[in-house]
Length: 125
Image (cartoon, helix red, strand yellow):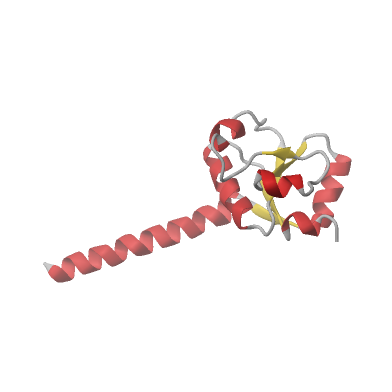
């Protein structure tokens, strides 16, 4: 019985590890700053989403960005206000929180999601 529980536990862990990897790989893609700037300049349906904290945003933001703090209250409700037909390029300082935000945004029904490679600082390099 103990062996059965150990094997079942390992299968459970493997399933969730693999499913979370699969989920991340299919929910959003990374996007270079060069490509993001080109899309913003050429298309009207591209929205930059800044998911950093208010104190980070106070130090500067990419012009035209929508700010929705991924770690703050009401993130999911605010995401539901975004147009699902738009392309959303999500950024934070480094890419960790924006990845989390993309997963949450996907659960809210958004499908055209991109994580800005290099985060906020890459826009100004």
